[in-house]
Every structure is written in structure tokens, then in C-alpha cells.
Image 1 (cartoon, rainbow, N blue to C red):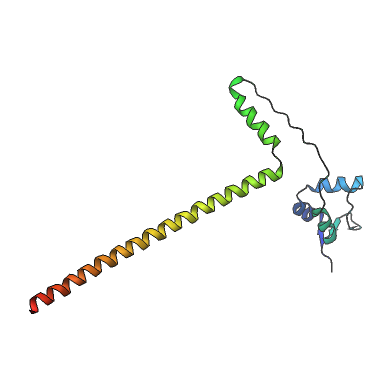
Image 2 (image 1 turned 60 degrees about the vertical axis):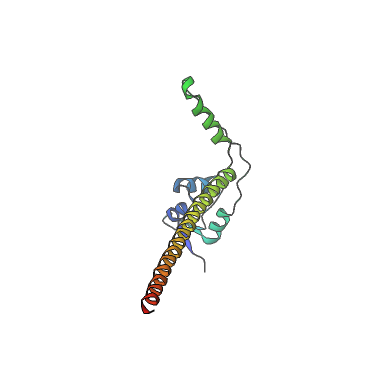
Amino acid sequence: MSKYYSIHEFSKIIGVSAQTLRNWDAYGKLHPHHTTISGYRYYSDEQLNQVINVKPKNRITIGYCRVSSHRQKDDLERQIDNTEKSEQQELVEDLVQIITVFSCKLQGKRANKAKKLIRELIQEEVDGKSHKSNVDTKQCTEN
């Protein structure tokens, strides 16, 4: 059985405003599954899947960047770099950053584990020597 979403629920899920959905209905882009007698629009699960799986059409993004002084030239260059990045590039950069953070944390844990192991070995060595010296002392006193 299909689930139906009110216009507000549907708009939140797909990330557009309810007004955008009303406009899409008026322009014929996406009609609600059904409209009640009182005018409430409802959208189905099938429509949700359809909207989520829609590939965006080829779009051209036009960016307008400006600076008001020569000192802000670096800001302009940063703006240009940001507008030239594609969504995939940004995603890759985010993933690299996440991997780097986890890698550093893992290295830190390994270093702490190694330090702990070294401390334990040193302590065992110290404990072993003190035990051995006690045994040697006993042997000397018995003779």
C-alpha cells in the first residue's frame, strides 16, 4: 500500500518549498497524486522515488565575483576557485579530509598502544631483575 505525503511533508523530504511544489503543479512539472475536495495536495511514494532519482539536466552555473579593492584580490581568487569546483570535486575533498582525520586518530591510538606495550615490557624487565636479585641474595646467605 502506498504512503501519501502532505505538501509540507513532501517538500521537506525533497528539499524544496511548498510554494515550489505548487508552482510545479501549475507549470505541469509535477502534479500531486491527488487533491482533496478542500484543495490539499498529496504526493505518493512513487512520486518521491521519481523525484529523488531524477538526474539534473545539464545546467550552466554562472558566478559573479567582484572585489572592491586590490587588497581583496585573494578573496576574488578564492571565490573563482570555489565556483569552478564541481560537486564531485567538493565531495572528494570532503572524503579526503574525513579519511585524513580518521587516519590521524588511528595513528595516535597505535602510538599510545605501542607506548603502553613498551612500558609494560620495561616494568616486566625491572620486576624480573628485582626478583632475580632476591633469589641471588638468598643463595648467598644460605651458603
